Amino acid sequence: MKNLFLILLVATCFMACKKNAASKVKEENVVKAKQRDYKSSLLPIASFDKEVHDYGMITEGDVVVTSFVVTNTGKSDLIISNAKATCGCTIPVWPKKPIAPGASEKIEVKFNSRGKKNKQSKTITLTTNTVNGKETLVIKGQIIPNKQ
Image 1 (cartoon, rainbow, N blue to C red):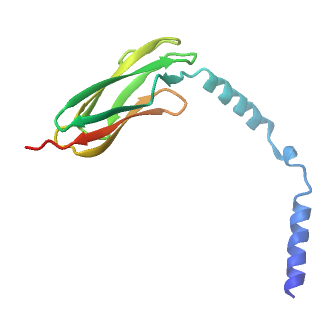
Image 2 (image 1 turned 90 degrees about the vertical axis):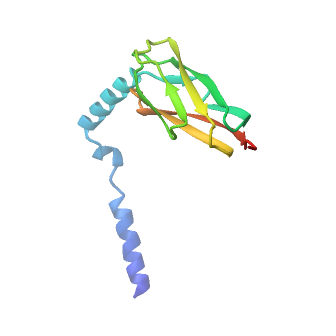
């Protein structure tokens, strides 16, 4: 009985798959996909000189500053509408004006290690008008506890 059921199941699967899958594609969906792809090719692209900065070993209480250079390698203005860090100890400063295609700007990130110890990693999330809608940068390092 089980063998008969298995044979019927396999036969049904083969019969259901005989139709050409391409014949099921609607032309209107193909047109919409081409339009979507064309529009996305016109979007800005955020390219960074680095996406991770390792500040190495610092002493607790030190304030370190680094810059990330963002270049718009896309075909329309890049807009960074917000930059948010995972912790209040990390403060990003980003360009508020649109970045033209081919232009570069700096994103400055300041990290205050007061009250922090050992290995630290902070993420800065940029809200952008790129395909992803968000870009991320990371700062990390090792903090030597202050012996007071």
